[in-house]
Image (cartoon, rainbow, N blue to C red; front, side, top):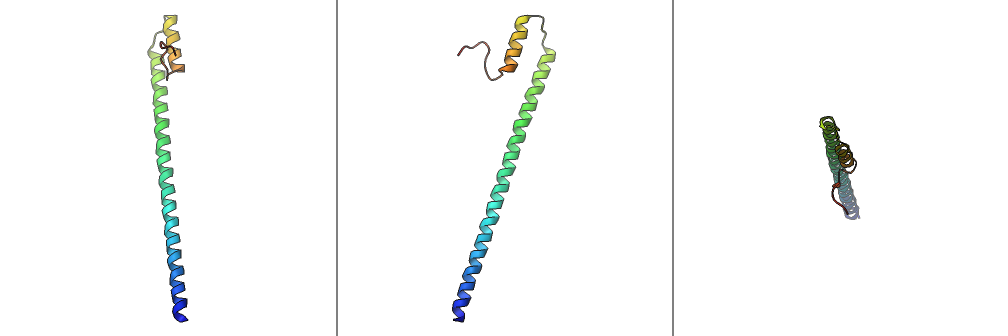
Length: 88
C-alpha cells in the first residue's frame, strides 16, 4: 500500500511539474508575441512619422505658382497610395 501511495504521489508531482512547465512556456510565447507586436507597431509609427515629415518638407519646397502644381500635389498627399494620372 505504501508503494501505491508513493507511485501516486510521484505521478501527481510529475503532472504538476509538467503543468507548471506548460504554463511557463505559454507565458514566454505570449511575451514574445507582445514584444514582436510592439516592434511592428513602432516600425509602422516610424514609417508614418517619416512620411509626414517628407510630405511637410515637400510642401515647404514646392512652389504653388501654378494651380496645376497645387492640385496635383494635394491630390498626391490625399491619395498617396494612388497615381493621380492613372484612371481605374
